[in-house]
Every structure is written in C-alpha cells, then in structure tokens.
Length: 312
Image (cartoon, rainbow, N blue to C red; front, side):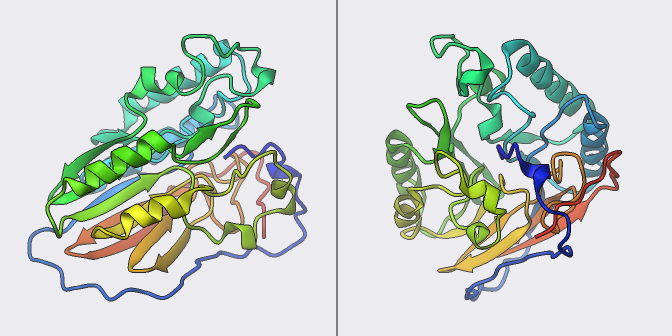
C-alpha cells in the first residue's frame, strides 16, 4: 500500500492485534476428498535494502516446504514502481522475479497491486505515453491484470482493483469492462460452483475504523474499492465462499452475508521495519474443505535490522 508516512506515526500506544468479524454464515458439511490449502501472500515490497530480499527468500522457502497446493501472490510485489524511475523499478522487478524463481517452488498466480504500476506519480519522471507505463509494466512481467482459474472444483476469480486516475494517482476501483467480464465469467459457471474472489485493494474492510489519521489525507480513496457495492451485487447471485484481500498490511477477517472476507498481512510488515498495527511480517494459509474456508496467519521468522513496530 502506498503509505509514504508509514513510519512517522507515534509509537507510544500498545500493540493491538485486530480481527474484525461480523455475522458468520453457517457452512454446509465438507465433502470428502475435496479439501486443499494454498498460501495467500500479500505485499512483498521487495527491495535490496533492510534485508528485504533475504526476507522474501526466507518466506518463500517456508511456503515451498509446506503442503500447500499453490500460491496466490496478492500484489505489491515491489517497493516501488509508482514514483521511482524506470531503472529502479526494473531493478526491483528483476529482483522479485529472480527471488521467486529461486525460492518459491509452487505454482504461483499473481495479482496486480498499486506499487506494481510504473511511473504513475509524476515524481517518477516517466511520461504516460511510455509503452510500459502504468499497468503495462505488470502485464509485461506477469500477464493479464484480471483472469480466472480452477482448482479442485473451486473457481478462482482474480481482479484488478487498481483504478488509475486522471491526475496521475490511484484509487481502489474495478473498472466497467472488468465488471462486465466478471458478470459473464460467473454467469458461465455451473450452478453451485464454489467461487473465491481475489483482489489487492479490499472490497470489505474495517480499516477506516483504525487506520492512522495520516492515511486519511490522500487525494483519492486508497483504503478500499470505491465501487465495491457494484462488485458485491454481482457476487451475491453466485456461490461465493470467500474474498481474499491484501494492501492494508493488517490481518483482518470479516464474515458478511455468507462470504468470508480475509485480508492478509504483509510479507514486508511495516515496510521492513517490524509489525504493523499488531500484524507481524507474514502470509496467510487458506484451507477450503467443502464450503468451509479457514484462514491461518503465519509468520516466517524475520527480524528487521531497523525495527520500529507501528501500533494502533
């Protein structure tokens, strides 16, 4: 998440770990033999400084040694392409891909994050007419910005929730063409097909209840998808079990209208300087058994060389 003032917050408040939960839906019994797990990994924010590349390798090795079937990398692979020049952004993306290839020995599905978009902020010095500007930088490395795949009877829908704005900034938004695609994709599924949706910027979050006040002073809404209601109206007509979210660097779980909204903490924690609002550096294991979705947050043993835990 683009939080340039992340570490300027007061450190005088005790750490609080948060899990927000609304009314839980009743799950039907699991069907025998269809249980599986995968790792949902958010906000690597890889960089050569602060031991971040070593930490990402450490995290990926732990995942590779685990029994998960695959990995979903939930966006913000690098720190950062938004406001840096092309040389730095390319260095970071090369570093990320090199680290993934060497240490993540599982199938990986990628999600676009705001930090993965090249030169969006004018400070970058990159002209919007550049062929790799914005989301194209991500597409050239990882492929389509939204897509679907299937695994053991579950249909996964990966969304692009980064809305680039006319003033060279961003907000949480799912564009109109993508909404039409989502409606058609879900409509083509057999009735009763279990569905999991993945997005970088959350559709549903309690983040505005506790996020740092400095984060409220942004030119656009960076906290959640501003047209999330439109997305939810499409989802409500289908058998959606869960929505997986990243971006906020906080582990948060909300049950709403029968859907589990699970937001993972960041591999980077508080931008490589410790825990953020009570969530340490880590990732989330997701297990699906029948219609039951369980999430478990896992740390991977990294300790920052410049630890400055950021509390609520």
